[in-house]
Length: 74
Image (cartoon, rainbow, N blue to C red; front, side, top):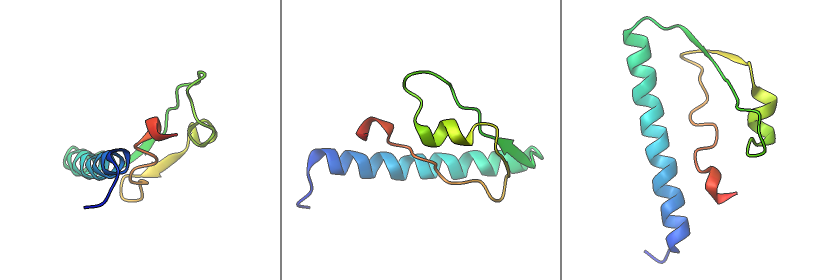
């Protein structure tokens, strides 16, 4: 496939995170959950994106999927 191991791992991780997020949203909808909120951990590993989005609320239908699933690549 002419891809490095790290690129293949990143792609697989991103796709898996997308599938897991969609499955979670489907389950939340079944339970009647209508919105969710980003809760960031504020420590030395928290990225600026997550830190700035802490507390933001979304309709379960508008949830960003996923925000950034492969943080180890940074």
